Length: 207
Image 1 (cartoon, rainbow, N blue to C red):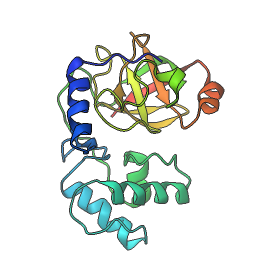
Image 2 (tube, rainbow, N blue to C red):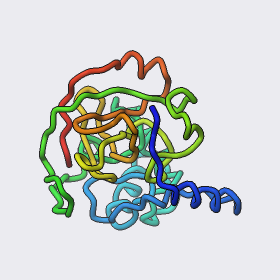
Image 3 (spheres, rainbow, N blue to C red):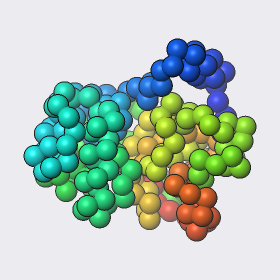
Image 4 (cartoon, rainbow, N blue to C red):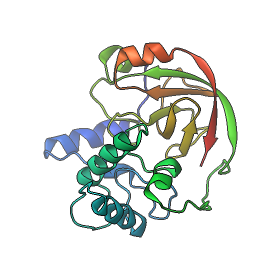
């Protein structure tokens, strides 16, 4: 998949790599978002950390910062309870953690709860899927990992939380030259998984 990038992102990445720092916090999400992922902060993250620590999925100190330890704890928990293990704490994971999921009002051009029928394809982190941006993170700066989805921002804005039929929870965090209109490209851990997914029509629900 050929993913378009702003020149600003390229310049920013060069500066970051020059000083030896890589931070997924470029895509920091609001603390009151219903879905939590790497870079989220606040009391909701602290609650998840405390629950995971109590369950034996050590996240380090309860500091309200969704970083590497929290991500690893979430992934281990998701694997053990049979959820897709991509480190995003959405409604399904919150349910298993015993956290009440209430709809949170937020801005944007689309309404939470809206369901869209989209044509879904898959991609992986390999060279063929990412030329000429092989080795770069997603459009908003998050590492490429399961749960990352490429969308047309005019249809689904970046940082929108999604539930994709047959795939699970996802985050609109990437873009592609061929991903226009009601198209969505879903990240898979391997090219074979992406090929197995193929091209299919799915229902995509916006959180």
